[in-house]
Length: 329
Length: 263
Ligand SMILES: Cc1cc2nc3c(=O)[nH]c(=O)nc-3n(C[C@H](O)[C@H](O)[C@H](O)COP(=O)(O)OP(=O)(O)OC[C@H]3O[C@@H](n4cnc5c(N)ncnc54)[C@H](O)[C@@H]3O)c2cc1C
Ligand SMILES: Nc1ncnc2c1ncn2[C@@H]1O[C@H](COP(=O)(O)O)[C@@H](O)[C@H]1O
Image (cartoon, rainbow over all chains, first blue to last red; front, top):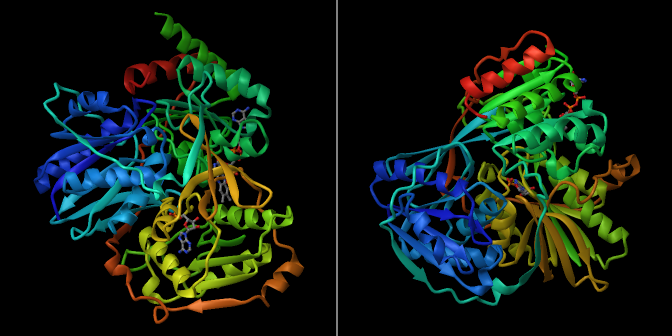
């Protein structure tokens, strides 16, 4: 198996997903143990302009696969495109970000190449010809370490915000365009529309700060009055527990947890959230966790960095006020 | 429209889990098992399509798992699947998504069945991967749409429109059957099977396939093996902030700014 490590950069509408750059950190660490080069690839329509920015993060070569039919993500077509980059790069390891697109794309790519696969890894290292990858399982109750066989193409997705992105330097990357010819199989689906849903407020999976509320908020109105202002003051996203979503206070797309989204922001606020194991599964990887709860025994405090035993209806607006003061300076 | 529901039996998320002596898998003793909630959505979707008068000819549930996984298939049949296929062999024991997908694909081919619609859960609550659906689609040479939250079919049940939410956007994807879909929360609410339906499910056909029936690729050959299961790294103890609410707010924001440096 070749030793080159291919970083797959996710872009939508010509914008690079910032977490893609974080992949260069584990990629470089792997390359320093196994030898081989770190290379990158980007797939889309009219994306060659992104090559320099990608190269600046430490790719020796940037493979560009562009075509009008690659405008939107379609698993089969994007798999064909990335496969050509894997072959051109003679890659032995491929890293994707853990996103909707990344999970999907990585799985299909690993299947096509009969590779070895690990999804949503929080730690990767090399041991001999094998790759060791750790990930959280069973609602975060256990961490599993997998060995991915060196005799196969090893495909991994890496959880966002676990590794910092390396600083960008000047790009000395070679840019290589790869031809793509859509096959009939690649054309079986049509993407009719892609509409941004984050009208004014970010999606939980995109934001550096997530402010979540639980059942204790009691209404959608109270989310608007108490939770949204703090999220806005911190330029963050609004999240919710399942109990709050099931009660209709927030849409399911904002649910954080085992059957919702897994988030790893720099800062997570749990306001009036008890901290059931299924909620922790979605947020315990956050860097700093603030818990605000009237009940000192609430399990959320077991994972919290800072704890406030207080009524959220009183405290959260005061915190919002303090943040605004800070921002005004 | 013949539908295949790909399901998995997983530990109840409320249950404590213990690791087997060799450190590589869960200790099955006393472990409470359930059908994965995302997979229940898949079966529910299939049954609702039939109830809404779509031309659904048959609903088949399939799983890979040990003896106990038959219970999951019975649950699927109690929700409304017509029959089930159980891939059951110690050689199939693995925590490897590609291997599961490969086995299911091999079984579909072996049985010589053709499905117009295959539904999987968006991901499972145990391994949390979301990889089996896309990989199965690849092995069966089908298109797939992941994490579907909205779905419509045309009258004839030949074409579909799927809606999915991805980070910060909603996508609308169209295509013709056959297709594989993975189901996100919010598309349907799973029902509790009624007692009469649980009784009826016991009489439905449950076919067992072992490694003798399938081309024998064993888990160890599948490229990814578990080395160890360990407790997650602990988080530092919580620092409680005391005082009146106004003081608390000031101190919290100061700590976030000066200590944690996150705002
Ligand atoms: C298969 C399965 C999957 C699940 N998936 C998820 C998931 O993805 N995400 C998820 O969140 N849950 C999930 N759950 C549900 C989970 O078990 C809990 O029921 C849920 O998280 C509880 O939400 P909560 O903390 O908002 O509500 P509660 O448990 O009702 O807790 C409310 C909390 O608010 C506190 N409180 C009340 N009033 C105030 C106040 N004025 N100020 C401050 N604090 C106050 C209380 O002390 C309490 O701690 C799942 C469950 C199952 C079985
Ligand atoms: N052992 C299994 N048997 C049958 N289907 C499975 C199995 N494991 C996973 N699946 C299917 O694949 C989906 C996603 O699982 P995963 O990729 O493991 O998160 C599940 O919702 C099921 O539909």
